Length: 570
Image (cartoon, rainbow, N blue to C red):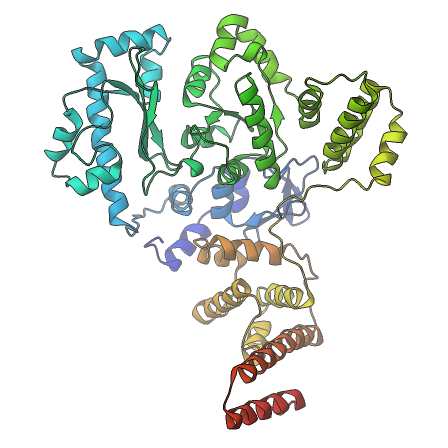
């Protein structure tokens, strides 16, 4: 959490105009009392993003993205809340000091250890002892600009790092916990070129060390997982790429960090890499925050093909439909560029496969499509994949291509999907079932944001909101009104900005697009539905309590409570 109080955040926000800020990123045109533009948070063809100068909020009528000036910058520039506040405060001309409470002192010690190690490793590379490593790196075309950009260093022998860190008063327990020093007090990395790995905020958290000379040792060794380094949650180069995504919306996903560096040397900077493990849903969610436009570019061998297939599935779970580049002759990106040339490589990037074309290549591999049985198996697999597509245009194009390839009538293929009722694999969706109780909560909160009168009715008649996050949101709105004697949606966004779940619920509420005007009878209906849930909930609790109770007198007392509730006496 930030140490900036709500009044200061309100002051900063009120000293800028959301229209002015957003128009620095996208073109806005006035239509009535609001401004409209192409929404940058989904593939938008028509201006669906509305910006209200009166309310100082934005809202997309298509994808549902909404918020105030802080949240716009957080989403567009992929900033933390504090980073967004700092940037807006500079525009507003208001000087602020931001500090954060240290959540975990142990984590901070490890960050300090890595920062110290980086200074030593970087110095080693420019010292005379680094001559051999520099020569190797230069042979790989890694010039000074590249070495500085990726902060590459060198680990020497003779337990240099252990001595260096101990001299700086780091204790043995913390050094072992960092993964840089063994339990016996020795350096983990010896005579290796050190490639730093950073977290999402750019803090150094791990290394991958490469041998300088080819010998029996493992070519690469990585820092073991620690409390600050979880391979499944990190993508190499992510902290740099997130800044580039403002201009280049396409992200290239690679298998290894050296692939990222190789592409950087060719002027291609919009790439990240997995950490030597299978691609995870956590990594897919990271990418989803940046962009939906992804090219998977793994090595051209069989292992790279299988990894591509698995990665596609993880991406589809979060709603990303990637494109794919497959390299010929089993080559990795660096070897492909060296053998085929940069122009040929760029041509592949400019013309990636869609996922159905990738599946077609994958499923026809080692198959004889002149054999009717194998052809039927192939067609059914591709039809299954086509049916999973949400994009109707892509579905139609895929069916047309399959028809042309197999010489099977396209109408037959369409009917085959229907006749066999080929199921779609489910896509993970976080949206809960919208029963009448949830809708009543959302609609009541919607009007609480509009009127103090509704807030007062909520206080008078609602003791318990069924959904935890909506309960908290209603309390926050009510308390905000008590403090400021007004309600402003832009300020509510600021108030709850530290809680992603509450922000999401507020966006869900604003997506309802209800009429601005309401009637008391309408509000009373929402209250009645919510209280109906509460009665049912209380009855169920009492019935369970009575079931578990062995004392006959207490059972009678519980039964009487149930009777009174059912009769409306309580």
